[in-house]
Image (cartoon, rainbow, N blue to C red; front, side, top):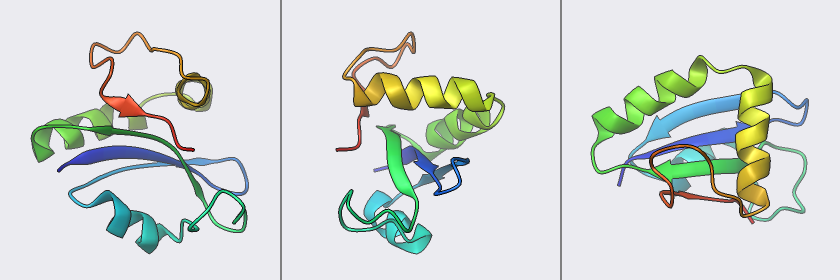
Length: 95
Protein backbone atom coordinates (compact mmCIF):
# COMPACT_ATOMS: atom_id res chain seq x y z
CA UNK A 1 0.00 0.00 0.00
CA UNK A 2 1.52 3.37 -0.97
CA UNK A 3 2.23 5.87 1.81
CA UNK A 4 3.41 9.45 2.22
CA UNK A 5 5.21 10.10 5.49
CA UNK A 6 6.86 12.90 7.43
CA UNK A 7 9.67 12.25 9.89
CA UNK A 8 11.05 14.73 12.40
CA UNK A 9 14.81 14.50 12.83
CA UNK A 10 16.53 15.10 16.17
CA UNK A 11 17.52 18.60 14.99
CA UNK A 12 13.83 19.44 14.34
CA UNK A 13 14.03 19.29 10.54
CA UNK A 14 11.38 17.34 8.64
CA UNK A 15 11.98 14.57 6.09
CA UNK A 16 9.13 13.82 3.67
CA UNK A 17 8.93 10.73 1.49
CA UNK A 18 6.72 8.17 -0.20
CA UNK A 19 6.98 4.40 -0.29
CA UNK A 20 5.17 1.13 -0.94
CA UNK A 21 6.26 -0.38 2.38
CA UNK A 22 6.17 2.08 5.29
CA UNK A 23 7.64 -0.17 7.97
CA UNK A 24 10.59 -1.14 5.75
CA UNK A 25 11.24 2.49 4.79
CA UNK A 26 11.13 3.59 8.44
CA UNK A 27 13.79 1.00 9.28
CA UNK A 28 15.93 2.38 6.44
CA UNK A 29 15.61 5.86 7.98
CA UNK A 30 16.60 4.48 11.37
CA UNK A 31 13.29 5.17 13.09
CA UNK A 32 13.40 3.46 16.48
CA UNK A 33 11.02 0.72 17.59
CA UNK A 34 9.46 2.97 20.24
CA UNK A 35 8.96 6.67 21.00
CA UNK A 36 11.57 6.32 23.76
CA UNK A 37 14.25 5.96 21.09
CA UNK A 38 15.03 9.64 20.57
CA UNK A 39 18.39 9.19 18.84
CA UNK A 40 16.87 8.75 15.39
CA UNK A 41 14.04 10.40 13.50
CA UNK A 42 10.43 9.99 14.62
CA UNK A 43 7.38 9.36 12.47
CA UNK A 44 5.02 12.31 12.94
CA UNK A 45 2.63 11.87 10.01
CA UNK A 46 1.61 9.27 7.44
CA UNK A 47 -1.23 8.86 4.99
CA UNK A 48 -2.04 6.07 2.60
CA UNK A 49 -3.10 6.23 -1.03
CA UNK A 50 -4.63 3.84 -3.50
CA UNK A 51 -1.87 4.35 -6.07
CA UNK A 52 1.84 5.15 -5.83
CA UNK A 53 1.55 8.05 -8.27
CA UNK A 54 -0.96 9.70 -5.91
CA UNK A 55 1.44 9.22 -3.00
CA UNK A 56 4.33 10.65 -5.03
CA UNK A 57 2.24 13.68 -6.08
CA UNK A 58 1.28 14.33 -2.45
CA UNK A 59 4.93 13.97 -1.39
CA UNK A 60 5.93 16.62 -3.95
CA UNK A 61 3.13 18.87 -2.67
CA UNK A 62 4.34 18.58 0.94
CA UNK A 63 7.94 19.21 -0.13
CA UNK A 64 6.78 22.68 -1.19
CA UNK A 65 5.40 23.51 2.25
CA UNK A 66 7.13 25.63 4.86
CA UNK A 67 8.52 24.15 8.06
CA UNK A 68 5.60 25.72 9.93
CA UNK A 69 3.02 24.08 7.69
CA UNK A 70 4.59 20.66 8.19
CA UNK A 71 4.78 21.24 11.95
CA UNK A 72 1.10 22.27 12.05
CA UNK A 73 0.09 19.09 10.20
CA UNK A 74 2.14 16.91 12.55
CA UNK A 75 0.73 18.67 15.64
CA UNK A 76 -2.85 18.41 14.36
CA UNK A 77 -2.40 14.67 13.88
CA UNK A 78 -0.82 14.14 17.28
CA UNK A 79 -3.77 15.93 18.89
CA UNK A 80 -6.27 13.88 16.89
CA UNK A 81 -7.57 16.93 15.03
CA UNK A 82 -8.80 16.85 11.47
CA UNK A 83 -7.00 18.80 8.80
CA UNK A 84 -8.38 20.84 5.92
CA UNK A 85 -7.00 18.19 3.60
CA UNK A 86 -9.72 16.66 1.37
CA UNK A 87 -8.33 13.24 2.33
CA UNK A 88 -9.71 13.61 5.86
CA UNK A 89 -9.58 10.29 7.63
CA UNK A 90 -6.74 9.01 5.42
CA UNK A 91 -3.99 9.97 7.84
CA UNK A 92 -3.00 8.65 11.18
CA UNK A 93 -0.94 10.14 14.00
CA UNK A 94 2.22 8.53 15.25
CA UNK A 95 1.82 7.19 18.78
